[in-house]
Image 1 (cartoon, helix red, strand yellow):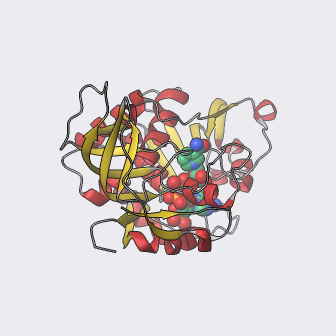
Image 2 (tube, rainbow, N blue to C red):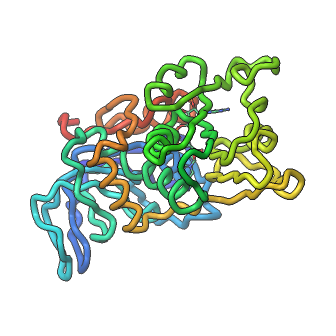
Length: 320
Ligand SMILES: NC(=O)c1ccc[n+]([C@@H]2O[C@H](COP(=O)([O-])OP(=O)(O)OC[C@H]3O[C@@H](n4cnc5c(N)ncnc54)[C@H](OP(=O)(O)O)[C@@H]3O)[C@@H](O)[C@H]2O)c1
């Protein structure tokens, strides 16, 4: 099979297109013949070595958390999955990933592909969808009618957070670059604030930190964005964050709670996201599709801050 792999930490230049033997499914594993892979921020952070303190990798490493394909081999002990099933894959970040024509993974890491999603959309579903679902349905204490501020609404996670928030009947404000205002309103946000043209004026449309009485902030950005988010919360409000740029926790000063969403590939989360996508609630963002061989270019675009409106998807089916 063709695959992308790296044998040391470094820039996108360490990514190489190689030919390898097909992996073989062991007990409780399936082999998936992949059609496409989503390119996630964590793929680039792992490759650069930035996450060495958190994840121990074995080289050579095939990157890729998200993928979609067809099961073509079933290991002993697997129940409920069959050869020919179309599935989405949530690959273990420390094992072989999805930038390949095939992957072997635990059967608990695949879910049936929602039939209404295209191959590209299915490849971009699980990692951002699970991040959104765990943040909103297992971390925040939400109830109908609450007001939420979602930072980074035009990103892959933010896109699915906006859709999920509307499904939960929340009042949704989001931040994004000015060019993406129409995009996030189209996803369902009630109002949007550009982060790249505020002038600290006297209107929230110029500066999200002028918002008030928000019940829950979802912070996917950290740093200065995090620091300026406390004042928008009502007393007793919640700030739920995903790991991004470091920040100072000021929960006590503002009388709010600050909670990290602990993202995992729990089967409960994978199945919930696939079901919501199947019901038409979640439609992942896809910025572009590229051939598998262009993985290094995809990582360069991420590191240049050029990723917007969802994932780059690597396509295995174009013969590259
Ligand atoms: N386990 C975890 O804790 C976990 C899991 C998933 C994600 N994350 C983190 O969550 C973040 C988002 O992930 P993702 O997959 O959605 O990334 P992504 O698809 O690359 O999207 C990032 C988005 O951030 C937006 N952005 C950048 N600066 C901003 C600012 N100052 N204010 C508001 N928005 C801003 C950009 O919006 P525009 O396009 O409008 O410029 C971009 O679309 C990443 O840092 C990722 O590492 C952590």
